[in-house]
Amino acid sequence: MKDELITQLYADINVGWNAQDWLVRARQARIAKATQILEKKHIEGVGELQMRIDPYVFHTWGKKHGYAIWNDPEFRRQMMRDNPEVRVARPKKGNKVGFGD
Image 1: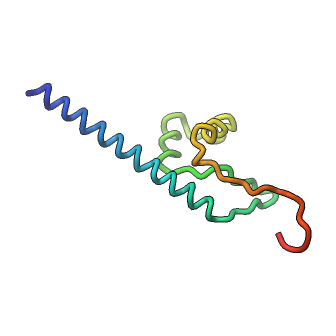
Image 2 (image 1 turned 180 degrees about the vertical axis):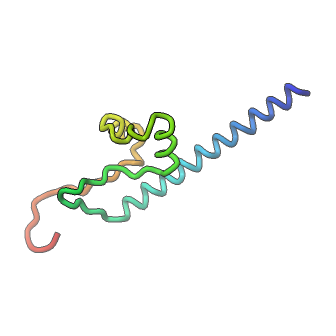
Image 3 (image 1 turned 45 degrees about the vertical axis):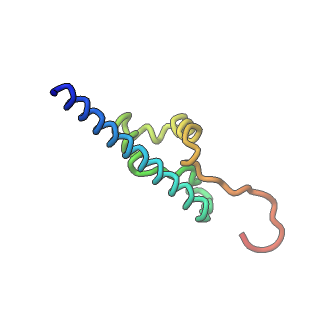
């Protein structure tokens, strides 16, 4: 009886973790889709948007490894490599003829 209860408790915990993981992935997919729709421009001297991260992912990594990890270019490169949905597509720069941006 006690073993069954423990087994059921572990199963319930795993379902909760899987649900949280699924929710985070779904939110990140929505963020990626919205990022593709919105046009963001690079402002000279300010920096360039490279990725959009779900707050849950940001804080999970920050609490686990320290928030300074987000300042590490190698970590950010690996994050974008392993999770392509966080990467913000940059418009191709090319020669333009005429007026406008």
